[in-house]
Amino acid sequence: MRISRFLHQTKPQWGVIDGEDFRSLPGGPYTNPQPGRVICKLSQAKLLAPMDPYRNKIPAMAANYGEKAGRDGPGIFMKQAGTVIGPGDAIVYPRSCTKVLHEAEVGIVIAKKARHVRVEEALEYVLGYTCVNDVSAAAMKTNDVGRGMSLRWKHFDTFCPIGPYIVTDLDGDNLGITCRVNGETVLKGSTSDMLWSMAELVSWTSEVMTLYPGDIIPSGCPAALPFEIGDTVEIEIEGIGILSNPVVGDS
Image (cartoon, rainbow, N blue to C red; front, side, top):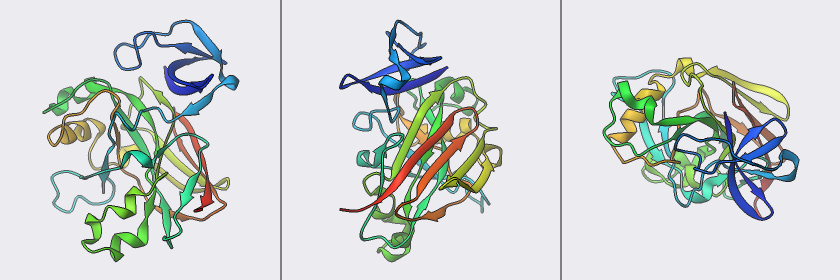
């Protein structure tokens, strides 16, 4: 099932994609979503990020590819609400930045309240998966006092494109990840190379904070690469679709 949040007749709403149509979700997207009546054609609506960032949170995973280096789990950092944009929205390249990176990731969408969840049960709390671009201002990680503790490098407005859909019934631990800049493939990877599985990430995060329906956990990226003003960045996740965003200069 492909679940989408979209704008139709100035009203944000949730729906299920059925061919060329959006169907309603009378009971909402998180609890046993069931398609209802046809709302409109896909062409009549604008896709939005599949979450409400002012109601939900984004605890993102750090360093989930490469080497464990003795760690018992990934790092966790938060993306502030203003970072979230949807498909087709512009990533703003901050005027104070000299190097900005795209980070192609699979986002885990939480379906129900989760706290102290065991790994063996963790996927029962997952609605599905979506595409995330965890944009980063690379130079500020090392320039700021505290380095990796800096809020600036991850938290500029527009630094977390999400979408285009939430897709259910996928094997989150075996999804291909592709990133293209201006149509050229610059990154290929797979969630099968993650250090900690999707279930482990949900369990790990639930030990730190209570997760609620609609929260999204970006699961980490295989690599981070730069882009420039004027580029178009595409994140494609196998079985989900393409998240495409142009890059514009700061005003």
